[in-house]
Image: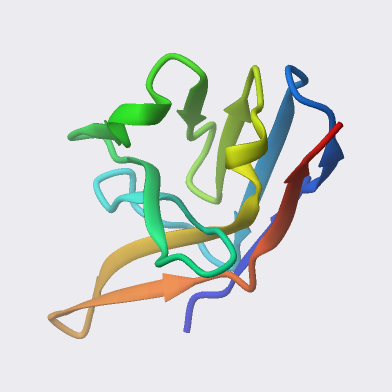
Length: 117
């Protein structure tokens, strides 16, 4: 069972930056995607960004402001710049990997990001 633990959330003002980090309880192959989703109040969970050694994907609306990185096999980070009130959401770390020949998804507990003046 893979556990994902997020850190780095908080409250910031519009235009500021924030970096989220996620640590996995075990090494995750670079070919397996890790990334971030978010869920704003009253809305469905949506893709923010995912990254593997094969591809990197961003929500179109976030390209240029958010940057995802994987520095090692245990962590994934999300650099968020020029934050806007509409970025307010719970941000979830996510990983997808093969376990016993089945593709499984894993989720963190989430970290709150609040952007407000």
